[in-house]
Amino acid sequence: MKYVFFDIDGTIRGKSREITKRNKEAICKLRENGHKAFLCTGRAPVSITQDILDVGFDGVVSAAGSFIQIDGEYIYENFLDSKLLQQAIVLFSNAQVGFTLETKDELFQSGYAREYMERRQIKDTQANPEYDPGKDKVTKIVFIAYDKYALLDTVPHLSKDFNVVVFSKPEDDFINGEIISKNCTKADAIERVMDYYHASMEDTIAFGDSMNDYQMLEKANQGIVFEGAKEKLLDIAYDTFKDPDQDGIALSLEKLGLI
Image (tube, rainbow, N blue to C red; front, side):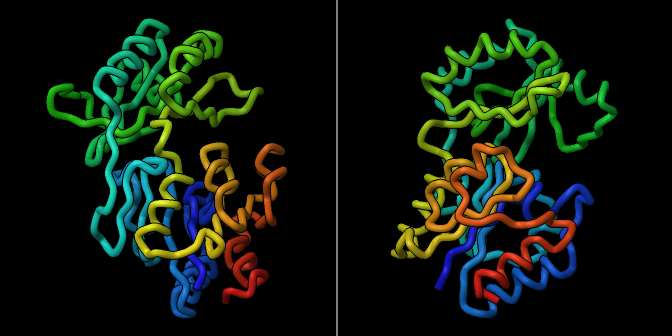
């Protein structure tokens, strides 16, 4: 039995924002053949859309490893230390960096983050601006800034306590990414899932395309990387997969002999 972990954006679905019929069927067949399939995403639980969940998975790792659900039950939850969280909020606010605080059930955007969304004409009806630090427990912070140097100035302070992951490309006119707990990467989540099943890491396969997948792709026995990913990811790849809009996941699962 293999335990197969799939990132969402850029992995099981591409720029079309939809999962191809063949990729859906491949994941279903994977499970029918006795293997376990898991989502392993940076998205908060509330941001995972129903069309993704309807594909059918044995478990969901969300918020980059902060939440683990197996058969619909949470077996692990992690939240940021309140003092470290407040320090990060102050750093971002002083640097005029937009940020979104992710909790289990809500997304809370700062004013600069909402301004970015408006300028890009991006609508996110799930975002809730009324954050209550006494009640809402935050699991991850997503950041966005037009001033790259202002953001980079915060990194030395943040990197002591957080993993800082940058998603944007050098040529972009903005910089964005996320900060997560040091012990709460997707790789840590995979280890926790395998401990839950009393299974071996030798039976793990991970599919991903971006830098927040780096640790899990490195940790899994076989890390399968999108062929158009950054060179740093390709350097650690066991193999590559083609564009998900061109049935890349299905083709790769067939190549691995899993379906």
